[in-house]
Image (spheres, rainbow, N blue to C red):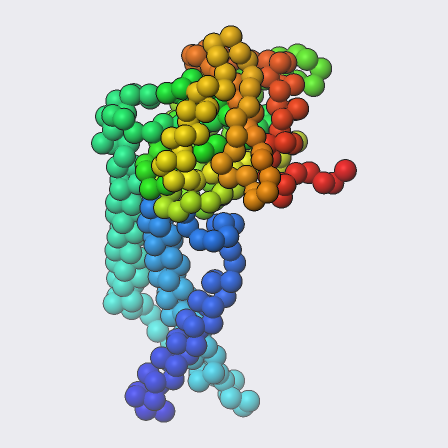
Length: 325
């Protein structure tokens, strides 16, 4: 067989392997977010992810094409019982499989670093500590067994389960978890690590009890998007669901005014309208006032637990209500 024909056959096997492999890796919903990516930062992550996938498939296809070519064209005949040609070392190949992977890994590391830097640009530019980031909208995210609170520092009010943000504006998420909670018998027990994740945003952040960490992202379209806990946190981990409601700025401003009026300093609980209620329904969000970190990170009190129990079902979208009973 001529060298030209060998090259042609190898390229043919490579193309087939690449096309089939890409078709297979395109089938799964890798991020569990219907409707595609939501955020500017998430699009960068998607681009990086698919770049790595395509590169991985390209390398895999080289291996598959070479194996297929060898199995078909260098197989032993029915009467061939001799040994194959003996070779001892190949400096060019050995140098190649050291240098090429090294270059690939270094290049991917640098690109990944650039994506992380770009995604944290809002945090870098908003010099200052939590609640002092140069006017950027901030939401405090507090995980607990088994739910979420979303606190708006500018009005001193926190919502349960769902929260609201404006479209096309960066939002900084200060993420933590409660230090303590109430066990079913009424006692006090330590809480655990949770992980705040909106799959459509592509960005997740662990919430460690008593410790604040920050991430930011910008929603590029309106609608409702799922919230999940991405850290196994106990028997009812699967119930830590919620929604982020992305609305136009005017709708958000009106809702924030209503949110600020939903409680007073003496109130411990209240409710506010939910801008993303399904058509024909008027859902509300349970809210409570908070004034400082000690309260926010302290014991999830019995009164707050009763509030959550009585309002969680009403504030949760119908699609997420537990119908197993």
